[in-house]
Length: 209
Image (cartoon, rainbow, N blue to C red; front, side, top):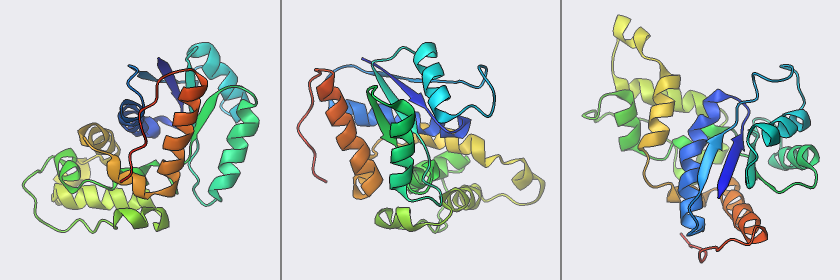
């Protein structure tokens, strides 16, 4: 089974390991998740509906994941925007509250490793997982945690590039199950199960954690 991810921007490639892990938990069917880059096609101001059409051409996948960060909008508004853009095609909406970075704040050791200093012991001031959707700026929280874990100062600190560390972090987390505490992730997992069933694919029993 081939799935594609159409996201807001390149920073959201961090969602790929999460989706791959979730699909492996959800179904015994081997799945591949591909990044869909529409930036080389059409206009920068293309609507989401136009980007969805391009995504289908670029990656004729079995299942399309469409990502929009909730940001300051009610999540339901984003779900409706995606539904209107995709119309009657099979898809799964990915709507983190408030943004993708919130889902990366779950693993202290992975954050230390992504920062390049696994030996650190300082408190990274991460919010409890159950409270992640209440964080007004999870990107800022994550960047601060990465810089604190990096521990450098002066010129060395200036050379540290948090966006690069974020991509590294996403590949270092092995278990994303704690995200099941979050409403948005539970909806993503359930919607994925429904989509796979619609495709006639086997679905594993629901995991309650």
